[in-house]
Length: 438
Image (cartoon, rainbow, N blue to C red; front, side, top):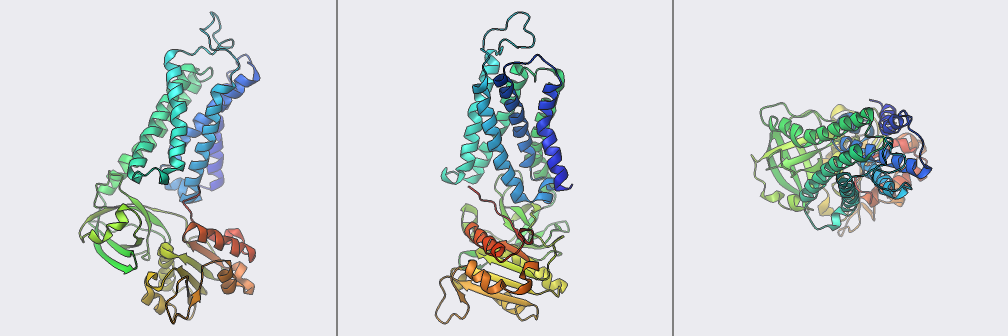
């Protein structure tokens, strides 16, 4: 599905409750009352659509990118937060017992105890979910704990919000709009069922097993898994999966990792740096341990992208998807010039160094190492993978016609993108994925 069509469908979904309310042709109320109702209608539609955005549906993320999908999920949730929090404070009509004959609730709000309670609960839950998502890293709890709480909280928010809309809404109480909310709520719940039940069930029938685990650099491991009873998963070089090692597919213990192996084989390799609970315990994982994958995901791929040359800019374990590309390009015999610029702090953090040296002997491949803390006798570049290094490598006439793939820490991504744009490279020729914004 084309991204433009996705946008049209999304806008139609968000505007639908406003159109259905307008079509009821009720007597007009004070402007603030109508603005309040409109904010609530649009905000609740955005909230229910958020379930689909967070459902890892490749029909959506495969077109606009998983990182864009996640960022939209964040920004749209905050938009809904503003609309819904404003909603109760905009009303000018008093909340009194219904006046006989006021069937359109034109003179009073007509709230009862249950609808007030569910509205208050939803109004409290929404900012709690938003704030805990923004400051997740500062909460001090495991990611799996936060994810479970976030999912259950979102479900409760949807149910309480739906009750409030159907019981207290001037427009939502009408049959057509009430059915719209019921269908949208059902789709939201179905998205949760898909993520937490259907997809794990599919993974259950396509297990993998750990083949090898080995340390390949300082605090960095290579994990290789092999399919058990099936042919494996097709993927494109540069993509990633959510990897679950040693747990039931129905558990929340999964982490996103890019494939470092080239596509086409059954085995899948990952480059993983020690950082969290799972990654610090990689040395204890034994061959034969059951593993599951959810994927492939991601748009950091060569598919449908063209350039006179290919530049791969990697920082640390950001090498994983880029070496997958380099291996695929070498295997396919791509004749275009290829430059890998690989930044690390120290020499013992360089992964696959022997393989990179061998690839650099190809006529069309150049590998440039950059170290910020080089050892004695180092003959490569010294410093950070920053604007100065980018200009030094790509200040040639047709650099604007190359395609650039960037993967690494957020600061490195931003520095590389700014440097490339300053060189005149069109943004469409710079491909990166980022998952941290706040």
